[in-house]
Image 1 (cartoon, rainbow, N blue to C red):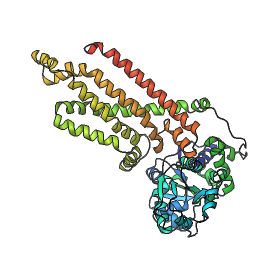
Image 2: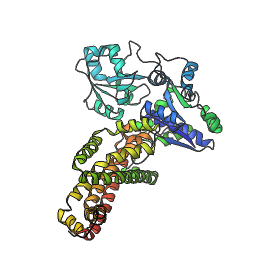
Image 3: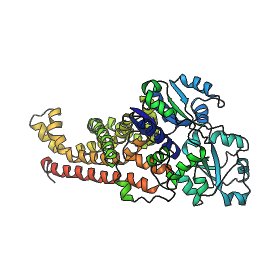
Image 4: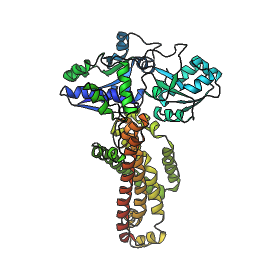
Length: 476
């Protein structure tokens, strides 16, 4: 199976689909794992073998990944990449540089044409993508070069930033030069008068063994070299973001040499929710929730028992579980990816199980504390040992409370499992991430609504189970 990855923005999604569909047309089995995250995550996924190839840009590879002082020739780039078992090649045929942009009326009113003119716009509000905020060739170095580090900056996904710009909530955004939103919103792309941004020529980054493992598919992919002009890429981006066409459809239209439909596509919410991928996404989401919940139960119940039995240890256990809840989900995922050296279901399941620990531990500890000393005394009077007392008296009586904690953990996991899409683990988050990339509310809702429905179904099922167990565990 040839595994194609892509980053979390429109152009990367489309190029990922073009690569995967090109490989599939050659007769090879190919899979596109869309929206895996930022550059560092894709690079780690490629090195670990979780994916085989993904589209990137020469400037990003040289400055962000290899930490080179500039963008060298391809030979030098590949010499550096070979140390990681990787290579770059197959240039689709266009460049896509970063830039800063403003609404044309605002830029004209303030006389801003160049990035350096922002020094005279001290109250400017910038909405920059999270990756651009942290890239070596992004905001930190750009602000230093242009001496504009004092401007107010907030992190926003591209799709959300454009909407905020249109509403006048921010003044400046980072854009790509093949981004159709610059035309739709009538933006002025500011001149990079100090030539800060390097060349960002689109290129495929792949594992060195890919051509030998998938020779037929690779031969087909190599034919993509020089076939996508900047105008064609802009049209494909526009078909997704402005006409609301799906990524696979846009890629298929281009590969079949059919021009994109000019009329805006009208998709109903029901059609988006019940799209053909619903069953696959549901099964992936259920697997993530079930696996992580079982792990949290296996660890949480013994920890809850210990917390109730040894109060001093319990304070530390509950405090640690509480701290885990405060760790940002993407930060935890990034740590687990680095620790495990892989993306996919494993780091996602481990992260979800950690987030579900607190309600399971707390539910177990509170339920056992509520059993009451008289029931324990009765068990001791019958000659039960500590272990027998726990298994035959305390835990059966505590089952409803324990189930309440598990029920809470399950509902939390259904919602939190949407983050799994950021590391290629699938689930309803795939739709939410894709919708965020293009600011398409229909696509976002088509992932959020099934997740909410699944949470309600699991809540209802566990509540029914709890009610049936209550009479057996001491009545109401």
